[in-house]
Image (cartoon, rainbow, N blue to C red; front, side):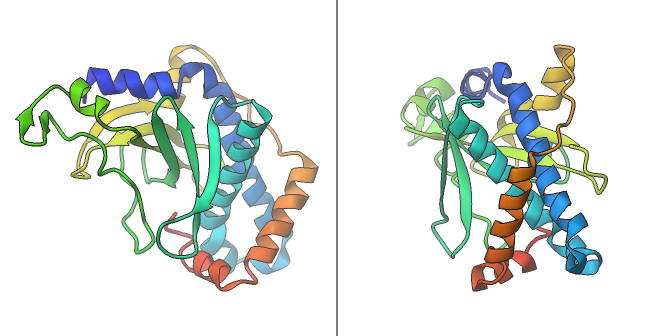
Length: 228
């Protein structure tokens, strides 16, 4: 990993935002689980199949709302992916842009799926840049927007298992920079108590999910729910 790129990542997504970030992610998980628990047709195998999709959707919803409200100091943009009908949330800050994804552990890369689309390629690779040996600082200066992931994982019980800002190398085998948000909070002796999502947010999210599952795009999302 590069000290320079690590400092870029931490400056763009700083420790000062960690509490609100974890709170928003916890609420997103809570939104999803409330839908599964309160919809009869989701109490069973179908609910388990789509829980991953619902949690990702809930997290995107709460992160976007927190950015719009000013609780998180990032620009949040929901837009359609370059391929297919799916959407992602892009968080922008300090010359970096990040997408949200689920991973099996704090250090794991997201699963490759037919709909997995990311922009890791613009990130500088090692100390080689256009055939010349240069520093990562010089290489990254030539890249207008470096790319990162906000990776999360939540066991079946609903607790947040990990939450990390991670900048992948082009080869998909290593990290250029990596910050475990939960470890950073623990080191600062800060504990974030999970909050129940507001009732109005639950109702709005439930209505949005019900509407989305009526469309071909929603059906496709349901089929890939475990992957995201």
